[in-house]
Amino acid sequence: MIKFEKGPVFDFHSLGGVPGNKVTPIVVSIVAAAGIMIPKTSSRAISSACGTSDFVETFCNVEIDADRLKEITQEIGGVFSWGGSMNLAPVDDMVIKVEHPLGINPRAQMLASIMSKKLAIGATHLVVDIPTGAGTKVETIEVAKKYAKDLMELGERIGMHVECAITYADQPVGYAVGPNLEARECISILEGNKHPAAVVEKACDCAGIILEIAGIANGAAKAREILDSGEAYRKFMEIVVAQGGRPDLKSEDLKPGKYCFEVKSPKSGYIHAINNKNVVAVAKAAGAPSDKGAGILFSKKKGQRVEAGDVLFTIYADNEAKLKRAKDTYVRYPPMDIEGMLIKRVSPLSAR
Image (cartoon, rainbow, N blue to C red; front, side, top):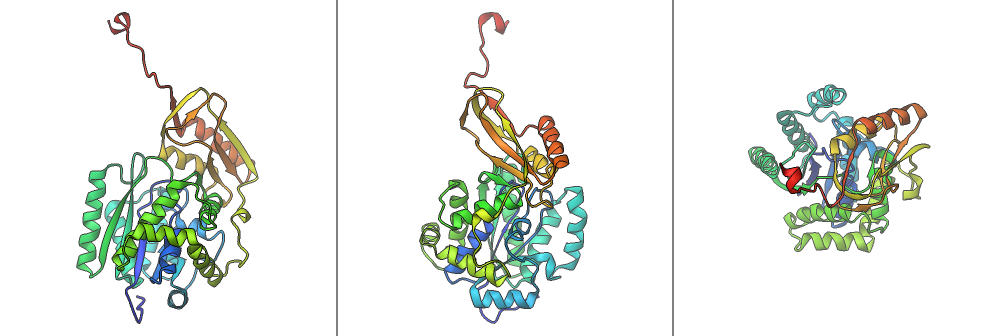
């Protein structure tokens, strides 16, 4: 267990389950830039196409030991580390190795996994993101509230202040799914790009909760100010360099796989829904997260109007065989549902 000489020590965790959830490095950079310690340990993908550590390791080393984590956190304010590299919760690490190939993440084990690692890292305060929506681990607000209640009760029992953010997850967060693609989108936002707005908003809202717990008023607005001013980007680069990353890192350095296929709309209409589970299935078939260039880049999102022939999304893979496998998966499990405004005409004759 890591013990810091001074506190408070904050941490942030997402339950995951929603594709493209790349907010963690942005949250950590904002919080650390505000002068708050946040030694963030993340997991690799268990049931998804890309965990935080899977994309962070595309631009810096995530396998750092406990002594180095403590040193970087006390010097710079935060880290982006893989929890499995420090042997903080060895039994949990063994269980995760079994869960990953099976694509499972049971509720009780998930809660125990989160809290054991946060306790071991020395966190005194924790904010948990609970992505909620169809095709995720948590599909309804009611279930999300139960998770939040359990997490807060567990925190109280072990002397940790826990708050939760129930977040929208009816479709992927942002436009990129897969290690290199997510890293590129994440770094682009830190560099000053205000798109995708959903990623910016979610990151600032989650960081804002941490700032407010730490005593900083109007947390979300302050988080946005830190992001827009470039303070978060400068802190991000400090952390990246401390973890062995390049000091001249740019978002465009992260390249998608060399093999790609554009999926086009078969008809005109509106994107009625995006199936998260099918998105994950296609991205994993393409090779994510083990193949860093594999994944999906969306051109359109839920609610947008499309014309027949418009590109909906592009599948990327590092080799032709996996691209073919991903194309076959997309045909069997289409990620998008496109409908016109008229669902069905009902007339006296058709109603009989």
